[in-house]
Image 1 (cartoon, rainbow, N blue to C red):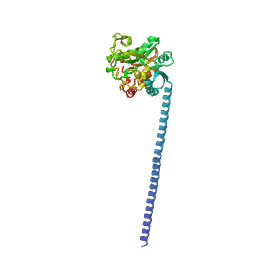
Image 2 (cartoon, rainbow, N blue to C red; image 1 turned 90 degrees about the vertical axis):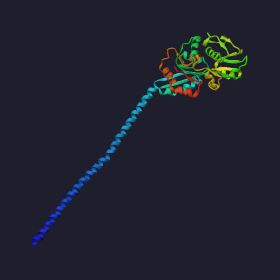
Image 3 (spheres, helix red, strand yellow; image 1 turned 30 degrees about the vertical axis):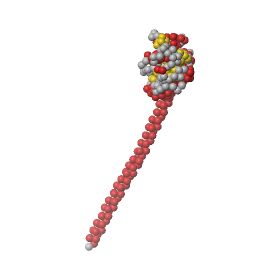
Image 4 (cartoon, helix red, strand yellow; image 1 turned 90 degrees about the horizontal axis):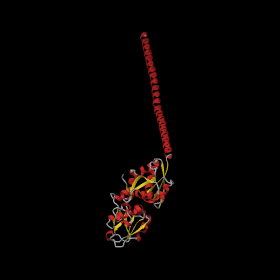
Length: 323
């Protein structure tokens, strides 16, 4: 009886010891697992922070690089300089104003001085006071050189302005009265151009040998006994009410609020001989046509952007010239 009791006590003691040992191992394992999970969580938490810092540093580096590139580009732009151009106001100065931002993108500053006559714009280029002018057609330039001994050349053909016959006291060319007065430009080339246009309308006949040098003295047939009043081109629009009809240059017509496509009774056509000889050009003194600034100016004026500006703005009164 006593042996049995002792045996049971010993069994109970051993069982308790085993349970205690298992509990101790489990606690130790749990502690180890808990420590590992905490370490992992800490590592996982710290990883995005490190990544964000790296990305931020990289972004700052990119911004700094872009800023340096922009500064470098600006420095290059500022180095190109200024292009000075003499021009009449409409449409030439307006077209140049549209070209200025495009030139600025290339680093050029465009300075435009407006003139109201056809003499001074050539004289300031001949003297070297200005780099270029933009107001005249090629035939006028050649005539100016011949008459005044200047040395101007075309650096590029840009547009043409159809010359138009505008109504004054009368409005029907087919019913023109005998002895009617018609105002025409008094400079050599534009007068010839006006007379050629009047000939196309059947109002006069010119000596076929006269061509673009025709004057009133070359009229061989004048069935309506028309009187031709020769005036400076810029004076004709404001004198229009004083005449039966007037032949007006495109730029001066625009200044007066006239549009060749809607107000003129007749205009030069794009395939006419006159248009080919009266294309408006950028003119420079001989030897400067290949200057960097001049080439940049001509390139911009012949660009698609400026062609579109001309077409949208002038609706046929000014037409881009295609080489």
